[in-house]
Length: 140
Image (cartoon, rainbow, N blue to C red; front, side, top):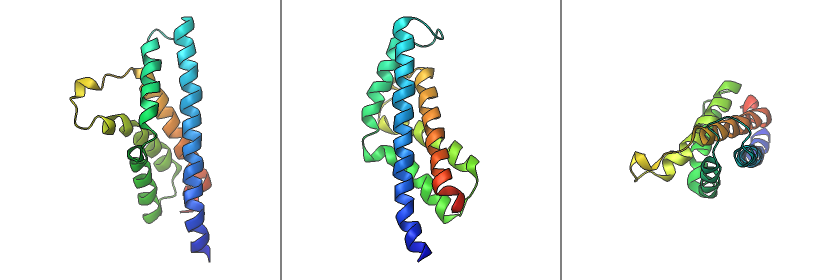
């Protein structure tokens, strides 16, 4: 009976972690765009970085964007990895792979993203990985 409960809980925890990730991308991305528009904030924050982030948001809707995170969860569950570091760092790395995977058959020069975009993606991935670890990963 415990295995059935686990099978039902894992997708729910994954969807909740994905929702937190999207929330962090939207809220932190909005903050960076407002900083760029008002001229307040670090010098590397530009309006183009905000538009890059919005353009990347459309690629998160595809199944291709979920593949690295799903593989991270499957490996963690099969190997019974309970460490928070695995899920937090893995979540950031999985989300950083999405822009790379979306331009798989294009030259690397096309992947000219601002460091601000990478910061937002990494922070969102870290948050999503932490939420998954809190809900399901620590009991793998």
